[in-house]
Length: 115
Length: 110
Image (cartoon, rainbow over all chains, first blue to last red; front, side, top):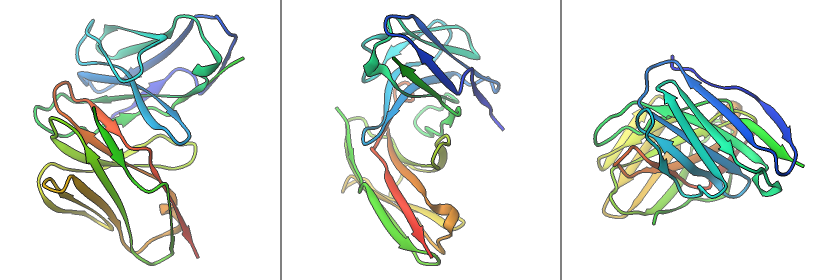
């Protein structure tokens, strides 16, 4: 089975800190994604990447950046953490499949609290 | 843009059948997916419909009507372990982007 591993399950950071969330997948998937999940808002796409060094903005990219230097690793960066970035962050990966599928494999999530 | 609507909460009795509906508005529609998420857990992929009709996988079935921009997830022979949140998600192709609904919290009661 595909495994998507997020480096931290819980994280507490101070306002203004630079925060790195790491995600690694072990099945050679081309696509990787970062979502945040908030009560009543579902999962919202922050950024995604379909290849090494490639990135695309999702629906809510403001205040975030990403890095994909290797195929298996996709990092989410909060340049200057703010309290409104307190959330559950979910990483996902999927195979490149033209025209269909969308079957994501998710990591267990990182619950980030910014104080 | 894309939007999806699904009920926020559904309650059903153990052993019964429940249907969770999802309507969507999107451009470049490729298909509709369903995910299950237990409290504190990661979402897990359940099903994907690209064509109209019913897809069955064990106790779970998923339906799509492209002309109506509508789909549903059908859970049969409900078990207590089915208590979870269920998300519909639209796959809009391109770079495999998926947009999720806000989720339906299913509570199965004895």
